[in-house]
Image (cartoon, rainbow, N blue to C red; front, side, top):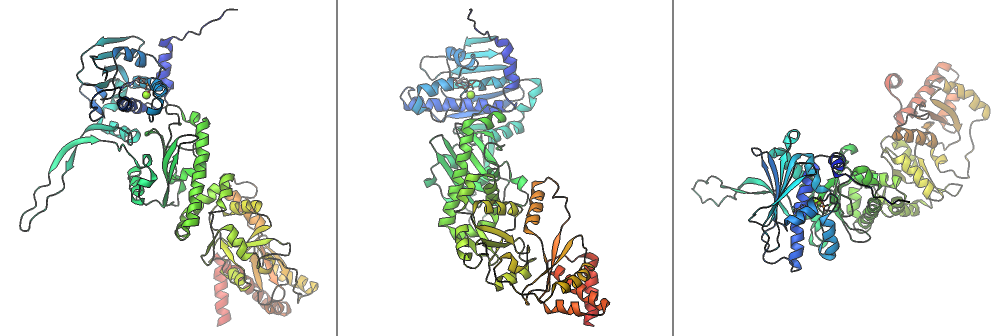
Length: 628
Ligand code: ADP
Ligand code: MG
């Protein structure tokens, strides 16, 4: 048996790296600036260990776009490299100096970004020649220049460099000239480098000095402007600080920093701070949701050691959390990889479930400790919570402690509190507690009044997810069912043993039935008789709870399946004990009888908002005739 060694030809691999490793050409800038930041952080670490002598000065990264020279330079005054180090770290693809550093200086190397030893070569996606001009922090080193034109050959020469640190000089290729434009570079720095931990400078900017006090009678002088470094980043964003050091206003101003174009204030924030079993920091915000939830998505920004990675967080945070805003930062999130890789990553999965837990904990805390405030914000956050409750069982479990239910009197309850409240009054003969609800208290006014007369309470469940919610709750709560207030006549909603005797005989009902059927659309309305209280309406319209829920869920689910295409169908319930019904039955003039029946049925339709168009016009005219 022969043993072999797979021989990788660098000249073959090189183009592959350039083309396929990075989904996005523009991230070259992120990679090079992060290397420069790493160089500064490493120097800080070495200095704190006494390995780098002397004062470090102010550590800074600078990006310089020179259109005339056709170069983009990334400059730092970090630890620098000797000629040998350039050969070792730069010229060896997939040898990461960062990884090596982290292994060597374990506890001092927090926050080093590099990892795979591939970032540097992304430079060749936009440059056909790259120079590395560097001087190490080590004493008695001069400097070195490395030049490579994108093949496997390079030149390396000693060359005097006065100052410590590294210039990475990109000779921008013809098809990437965009990266020499002020605006383009600004945009990229703002996207990827806005919160890097070392100052990043790009050109200069004018700043107006605060106006001096003007004495009375004197003319105000022209405001003075000065030229200052244009520092594009905030090296210490809120999430890197301890929650104890931050006030509510700090979180709000950080929100504006993240979303300068947003005018709404967030409702509240969650500061994430975990170091076990993985590292994760961040600040998440509950935004005030607008009607268009889609617009709100993709607002969470994912960072790795303060380097922006992506704002496409689907699959990384649970779907319902993509509605949140804010920042998540974890060194455990792999930086230079594609999204699909990210989604499959085990760390990313753990992070996702952890965030869910944190969000649930915060909601519970608010619901317990700041209940009044929480109730005020409830209408803004309930969709989000319903969404979470439906899509995540663990979240649903925790939601019992913060999911609020509002009744028509605008009182709020946790589910346990609510069941306690209605247990005595709303138990049916099967010993189930019936939760009555409406999606529209105005439309259901008549039925709600009847319910309240009997001492029942009515909840308002009015979001597009309510039917799904109700189904889910029925599954998770024992001996509880939900009934929308219009799904049956009031005494059937919560059925009792006692039956009211009917004033009509079977024969009389059979006689009246065709009369009623003759005046309504029989395809839509199923006529039936019920023995109700005399004080209940003579005719009522109900819609089966089951059918309606199925249809609603199909609508939300989007698939226009069998149920979705079914016509609306209602019950038209005739109260056999109402005096008016007796009167209609006994009317001998069929024209008058039909008119009476029509008027009564229309009133029922009217009270639930189903009388429309020509039917409504006819009803109005007929009513006027009757009054005249
Ligand atoms: P990584 O950052 O993942 O280690 P890179 O390909 O981005 O891989 O960089 C390779 C190595 O080159 C770095 O680890 C570092 O040792 C060295 N290097 C790159 N840029 C600089 C720089 N500006 N200053 C000092 N060292 C650098
Ligand atoms: Mg790197």
